[in-house]
Length: 458
Image (tube, one colour):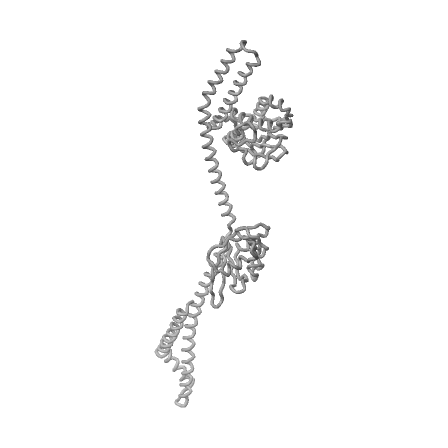
């Protein structure tokens, strides 16, 4: 309440007292005095008691007027004070509710001693403490960690940037800056949590307080990292898409001449058959094989560039696996691979496009076979897990590094001396078109597991 308003209240009650006194006196003289005087003369009759009557009358008048005026004034004053107290209590309750339910940590600190005077629930939640444990502590003794620029910390807010020990929190408080300072705190779980700290001053009578606003930046940091990753992935996908379009255009332009060369080579071989010795006709076979390889490469590029059109229907995943293994039996035998099919007796039904899923599984299985040039074991198993159809292709080959796993589904990425690096991306594309997921678990020289999850029949 302001001093000017207090002065107005004093003047009001002074004037009210004067007005009430006049009103009560007039009411006493006009209304109450005649009956009162008659009562006094009854107790003090005659002229000898006139002085006693007068004194008694005066005493009663003074008592009555003072009592009436005081009761009225005090009642009004108490009502005014009660109303102000209720307003003050409601205002304090609103402040307390806002203070305690704020999404940011708020701490009020003494400007001189740096001791904590008041904290809200969010600040206690950040440090994993209760208010009684924090109130009275020096704010600098809390578990302030490294600053955003990576400086080291001793756990008490003292950080080192290579040029000596600097208490960044104390420096920030001494600077009395309104700008945000990015620090970090050590939570009760021991993790470092990035926070933004801002400070403002608050003067109350002769005391000067500091109000610190501590904001959790972990969500913002995560969103920024996700945004950067999405932008990087988008830029990468745009490059891959552009490269794929160029490759598809080149493959399309080359396909027809290659087909002509293949026909010419086969015609030449038929013309020279019987006229040249067999060791010279081998050159024609080499030409034909080389052209076939180029035709297969162009077909692979065009297949990857074309959109996948699916006609899904309920299929037994076990039957698809048996078909793929049968088609790759020559390669399995050539690499001396021990095959192991772990297929349940019951059908594992999934909604599949047979042609595209067969091509995808051939690419994946062939990669596993080629990772075991000295022989090994190929294990293919199917199962029903949490309402989905799961297929696992495991090998005992050379395995992959973490970097290779990260890049294996990128178009044109390959570790083979021959190959375009389109088999794995094509398989991923087909599986995602089936609303499925593919994961790879591998370690160097410890084999690889390819796990595929496909939607069930429902």
